[in-house]
Amino acid sequence: MLGPNALIILLLAGWGIIVAIVLAAGIVRPRSIGDFDRPPPGQAGLLVGLLVAGFMAWLIAQGAYGAVIQARVAAAHGTPAKVTEADFTTLDWAILSTVPPLTAFALLLIAHYFTSEMRVLKSLGFTAHNAQRGVLYGLIGAVAIVPGVYLLSAMVEAAYEQVKFRHPAEHELLLAMKHASGFSQVLLIIGAAVLAPLFEELLFRGHLQTLIRRSLILLSHRPGRGFPVVVPPEATQLPYAAPEVVMPTALTPTVATPARWQTWLAIVLASLVFAGVHPLWMAPPIFALSLGLGFTYERTGNLWASITIHCVFNSVSTAIYLYGVN
Image (cartoon, rainbow, N blue to C red; front, side, top):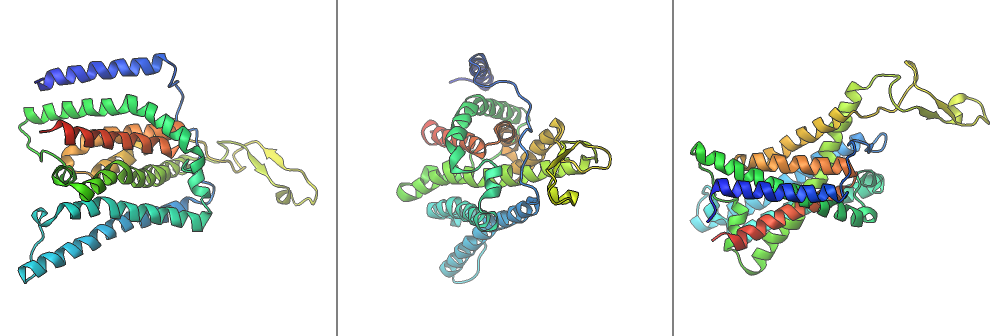
């Protein structure tokens, strides 16, 4: 069996070869990020509201089912008792891994439809029209990003060994997945491989990262800097005047243009939050994965791309755990 150091060297070599092939084939070409302006003008407030609503729906759904488990435990003991992980059945874990993210994801889609007729989702790059291209981008990105995350994970584990840090052997959902069977195991796999990536990417990349980036752009914007704006005829107070392009000056309004550092800072901040909702011992590789997801989103402007990478990562992790861990 390979030791930790040999495994890290093997992963590093394999990842380097894969990235070299991808770059040599011209599949990924260098290009600055942050070229995609979103959301539509005047819709940032909607994104804030939906960000809060989606996150709260996810928490409330978990809390509601937690109350069901609490009532079941109390009935079994004949008196209120503290709920521990031992009281959770595999079906409980299956429901918790599917119902809360599905509830929050559906809420976001329905709210977007009734408040903006999907116009905001279109600006976020999350429509059926761009799904095929986004999945292709995501599969290409997964080839370069996912092995790198596993490499970092191996390095972190080696560091944990050096400092004698002990953490759970696996995430509780993976442990439940290993001991589940039939319908419960199918639900757990669907929750990890499909529903979690859909909800988390829409919330953390589509809403949170977008809002952080927009806030940074607006905070650093100065009048007279940016793209020229088009002044409609009615603004000139002449009945038959044609639209006029006004070049930016210190006194004319402009559309704020993003700087690369603003986009990168938004990626980093959103990734910190994303890593923070996961167990602490998993934070380093999850943060690295999130950086890759955020970069892919800003590079393509297509939310399906980051969703696909997230699905690939979770699916591979699930497969490795179920079939590669004794």
